[in-house]
Each structure stands twice: as structure tokens, then as C-alpha cells.
Image 1 (cartoon, rainbow, N blue to C red):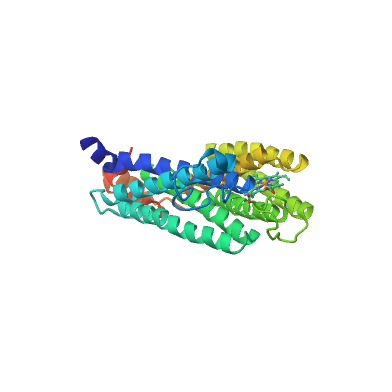
Image 2: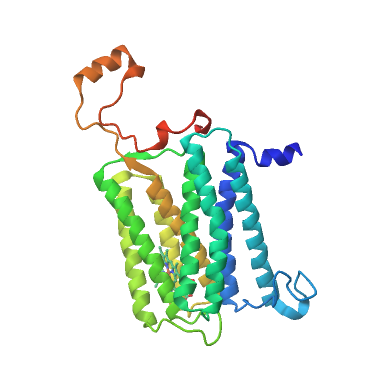
Length: 328
Ligand code: HEM
């Protein structure tokens, strides 16, 4: 019983739940993609049982039954993780602002599950309308960003100060990544992987939208290079690595007729790209350099270092709100 309680108690337990939430949300993107790409949406014909007389698929349902059942297991695991996260966040002892923020993020993650279930239902009712399918994926990618924010908060990760050009480069890179990802969903909606025979397509020219998607990706890569030059940031280098691998997968799948395995890898890459772009976005903060150094402050700092408040210091970060417990 003690071990079970420890799973839901304290900031360390919450850190594990935060990592599990990120992994779970990435897995659900990948498993959902496998279901769509293999046309396995009806692999288990009933719910919550797989067949009217069993919870697990039998051999006659073939690989589609196994894939659909696997997707149900991932959804179930994610639901458990989300509940674990919420309970642990709620049980944090203090009511400090940092802890309240963690609770709000845990609620967002918890509420996302029924919301995604509704969007999933609308997806089916719309006959797999490509824009609704895209919304379902984009919502999952937003949740991955929320998970990264949650990890930043729960680990109280440091953010490096950046000047105006660096901040602009980071924000522009994040926005361009969102545009590239959205255009990617338009490419998918215009291509052959609809998820069911006869499902509607966007009607756009697949080649044209693929070029637009790739152009947005060039923009993201240019923005990331600017971040590396301006900030020498490790988060930007990591993002560039993810982008180059993801870009390579994109080109290979484009020129080889969209094989399913590569399309799944591309979706995993899209999840990691959004996570890394969010990491870069959160890794910086406005520079704390005071615009003007007040000599009185320098003198005071030498006499009573602890009493001095920087005149133009940036207090937007949660340093002042973080409880000592949160600091590593
Ligand atoms: C940072 C790099 C990239 C990211 C984050 C990204 C992201 C995405 C996303 C989110 C999708 C939609 C997947 C879906 O709706 O199931 C997609 C689809 C696609 N992407 Fe990319 N992509 C990147 C680079 C590229 C590049 C360089 C190409 C080369 C042309 C490319 C080609 C494609 C194609 C052809 C599809 C449609 C796949 C299908 O029909 O299932 N991608 N991409």
C-alpha cells in the first residue's frame, strides 16, 4: 500500500507521470496512424469488447484485429497515465503558484481525453473527412506541446536569457513549425492514405501541397539555424537534428510512393519535431540584463547583496513563484 501511495505522492512521482504523459501522447499518435494506414479502424467490430463474446481479438480477425486492439490498449494506458498525473498533481502539499500551474496543466491533459474521443467520433461520423482527421492529429500534437510545458514546469528547467533577435528567431521557428505540420496534414488529406476506401479527399493537387509543405520546412530549418547562430542553444541543435532526419524521411516517402512504414516514421518524427520546437520555445526567456546600471544599486549590492532588487529585471519567469521543493 505504501508503494502505491508513493506513486501518487510528491514532485518526484509527478515528474515520472509527466514523462509518461509525453511518451503516451506520442505513442497514441503513432498507434492511431498505424490503424489509419492499415485500414484497421473496424479491426475490432464492437466496443468495449473486441467481438460480442471476447475482449481480445481472435485469429479470424487477422492483423487488423491485433492493430485495433493494440490501439485500444495504448488509449487505455494513456487514460491511466492521465489519471495518475491528475491525482498526483492534486496531492501536492502546497498551494504555491507553481503547484497550481501544474494542477491546471494536469486538468488540461485529463480533459483532452474525452475531447479527443468526441473528435474521433466526429471523424468517423464525417466519413473520415480529411480536415476532421487532420484536426484529430493536430489536437494530439498540441497535447504533446502541453506535455513538454508540463515537464518544464515540474522539473523547473532553466531558461537561458535571450536578446530580442534570439527571441524573435525562436518564436518564428515555432510558428513556422506549426505551419509546416498543418500543411503536412493537408498533404495527407490530399493523398492516398485516407483510412477507408472511398473517403473524401481535400481536392488539392498533392504535388503542389507537398511543395508548399516542403517550403515551410525549409523555413523552419532556416529559423532553427538562425537560433543556433544567435543563441548557441543546445535545444536548437537538437531540433535541427530532428528536422534533418524528418526531412529525409519526408523526401524518401514522397519519391517512393508513400510506403506505410515510412509514413508511420514520419508521424513519429512530426511528434518529436513538435516536442523539440516546444522545448526550444521554452528554453529561452527575455534577457535579464538591466537597460541601465544604477550606481546606487552597485554600491548597495556590495554592502547588502541579498537586499538588492535589479531595476529592470525580468520577473516573468516563475523563479519567484517556484517553491524551494521544486528547485533541483
Ligand atoms: C520538419 C520536417 C517535417 C515535419 C515536421 C513534417 C510533418 C508532417 C506531418 C504532421 C504530416 C501529416 C501526417 C498525417 O496527417 O498523417 C506530414 C505528411 C507528409 N509529409 Fe511531412 N514533415 C516534414 C518534412 C517533410 C518533407 C521535407 C517532405 C518532402 C516532400 C515531406 C513530405 C510529406 C508527405 C508526402 C506527407 C503525406 C504523407 C501521407 O500521405 O500519408 N515532409 N508531414
